[in-house]
Length: 158
Image 1 (tube, one colour):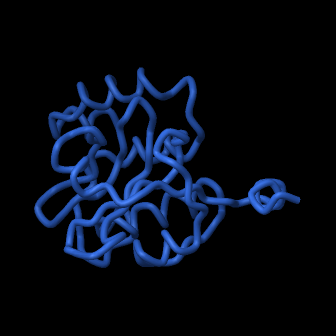
Image 2 (cartoon, rainbow, N blue to C red):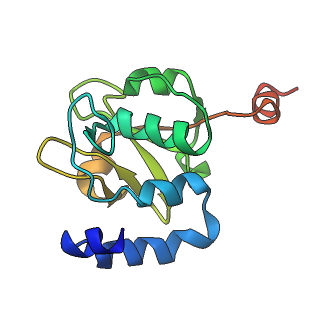
Image 3 (cartoon, one colour):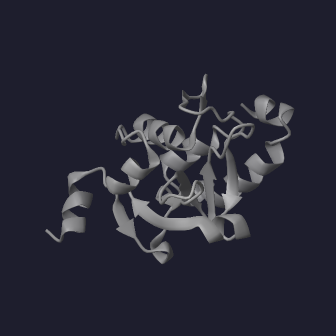
């Protein structure tokens, strides 16, 4: 893995992000970081074929948590619990309006104001700053994936 990242010139980014988040993140985030550099592919949902944004998020949750999210970003937003941006924890989903419609892009929050995603054609899975002007202007909201009965009951007030 490190050889592949070094070959793509991503080893520095990998070590910086890893150092920042490893000690306080879930397996989901650590797994997602391992996919840095995988190319974007519209409709893609595997490392072998490449990922689009929602395919990446779906694959990470399925692989690490065993939770199968819906396929499209707006469906993922509808199937998850709305949270305030100030409540973001590593593993939460962040949504953006990148195609002149709400929830047209999704990524996974990794901590320290950063998220990992598969951005667009010609790009690769990467980590970006939520506070960058492009993403800040397009931020649509944050969501938490409820996977276990205890989380679902807590969210519903039971």
